[in-house]
Length: 256
Image (cartoon, rainbow, N blue to C red; front, side, top):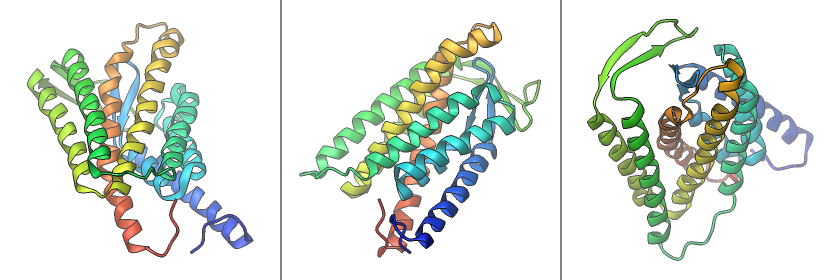
């Protein structure tokens, strides 16, 4: 199957892929959510499908499916006030991941990209641990389900050690992916980290400067950084093996 620019058939296939993966991004974002009262946002696993789409089909489909699919999920879940920001942030995220995935550098040594992957993983793990232990220790209320419940679904007692262990786990898993995969897929780990970092920063700025004034409340934007890092980590850990498997089963196709 040729997805390159050109024929009418190819154009139809590209449109079909765009529609299908936009829908998959929307569904994957909605299928599991945890409300975050501090920012009126929510945790989801939509990053997984944003990354898969961008890595398989490049920046155009990745940005449109990522932005539009995630935006509709916000609207359907009742987080309409995030929809404009989500459209821009997730489109940038998908576009960056898709663009960088086709700009593979020529690594002279596996040590180079493994070291870089480990460094970024350490940063993500540190931020997750530090901010999580600062804002989410003690009694933590979880709001699960759709529509967003008005009272906590689950109340957990979370210790700082939980965040230490989770931060270490994120570092280890990202580092293992760097050691386990060949340079081509090591680069894909870095591209998803780059796109995910833009997503984390984008939502932090939006929450800091728009959500608070919009609702006339004090928003602790830092409180959602570990949530968004968690989304990014889940997306990376799931999407890279999926993309690797798809490319292995369709070796004759010219992937981005």
